[in-house]
Length: 131
Image 1 (cartoon, rainbow, N blue to C red):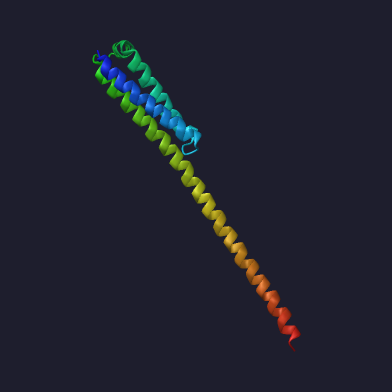
Image 2 (image 1 turned 90 degrees about the vertical axis):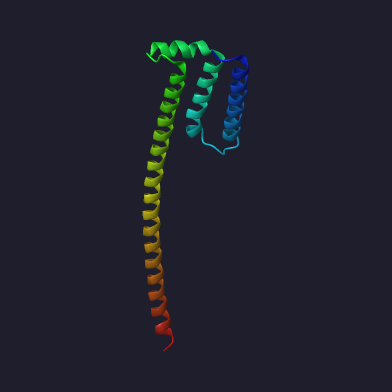
C-alpha cells in the first residue's frame, strides 16, 4: 500500500498536469485529438491514486501478482498507444505534404505557361506596331 503522503503528492502532480493540458487546449496550443489520450491517462492514474485497492484487484484479476508490475504494464501499453497515434498522424501529414507539393508544382507549371504565352503575345503585339 502507498502512504498517504505519496498519494497526495502524486495526486497534486496529476492535477497540475491535467490543468496544464486543459489550459494548452483552451489556448489552442494543443489539439484535443492529440491530448485526449493524455487526459484519459491522467484521469485513470488519478483514480488509481485515489483508490489504490483498485490497482491491486485489477492486477490480481489479470494474473499479475505485483501491483507495481501492473503499473509498468499499463505504462507500456500507454506508450504503445501514444506511439501508434503519433505514427498515424505522421503518416497523414506526410500524405498531405506530398499532395500539397504536387499541387504547388502543377501551379508553378501553369504560371510559367501563362507567363510564356503572355510574353509571346506581347512580343507579337510589339513586333508588329514598331514597323
